[in-house]
Image (cartoon, rainbow, N blue to C red; front, side):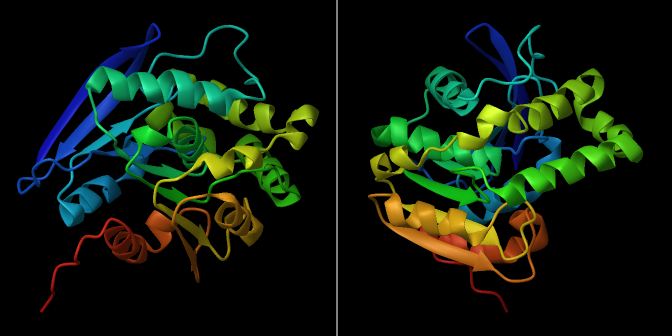
Length: 268
């Protein structure tokens, strides 16, 4: 398996990227792009992207958004983020990355904020996407989401969580955390939603959520499935929290293979 780390500059911002290519990669198949959650980095996906690359035989690209990991930091005054920050992540950075790398109709695999950005991109550039796999996306703000963020802020302030995150975000750790909690806790952010954009999504969509997600309810999934225009598959996973690819990775990989029309390998 080829594993390569590199950087791509989009709109003057250097984004840290990783490319994974399985040895038996299929010819002329779309690349899977991984989009991380609010506190995510490349390394925080652990080995899941490599497992999915191996199972699907598709090349994979993972990247870190601005202000995360080894990508360029946020600028002065960028935090809290604007209410429409998902639009910038979709239209400027994700679209720029896809263009810079010359990718044709990639598959988007997003988790949490990354899933919301994937849905945004599929809605705004419907001809540019082959399929979307969405884990724990938010298309509107719920009380449970804000409660979960408040709990996270308390844990960050009273435990060694910051020290653990510094292994991934280095000098950017406090700003990464503030970018998440301060943005979502803005009073005006409570009215944010992207439900009106969902009908623009026409590509095949797999919507995954754990039944014990502390940051969102099943209503997120139901809303997405009700409003998109393309084929959609709903998957609620039992005994699963906010990170299905950690809690139930085999279920996620099996569902992803089926979604992409790939026959699962026969095991002895």
